[in-house]
Amino acid sequence: MENKNFCQSCSMPIDKPELMGTEKDGSRNKEYCTYCYQNGSFVNPNMSLDEMKKLVKAQMEKMKIDTATINLAVSTLPHLIRWKTAVSDESI
Image 1 (cartoon, rainbow, N blue to C red):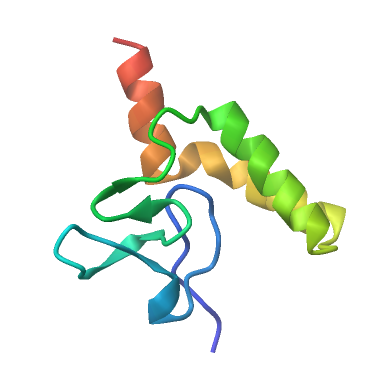
Image 2: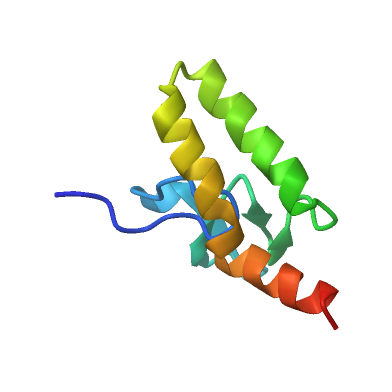
């Protein structure tokens, strides 16, 4: 079965409950991974989309993931919930 849940901040597949971010009450957040979202807030709340693109690319390169897959992941970022909101806020 193919994974259908991706972090709406970094695009990482969330295929195990332990990879889900957490709310303040300890419950799991299904939209964000544990690397991006802990205890009800973003780990790096001031991170820009460009910074996230660089981080995702660097992490995927460390994992020796092919360039096409890296490019796909990075190009997906602006369409994720976290970044759609940030872009909308900036245009006001």
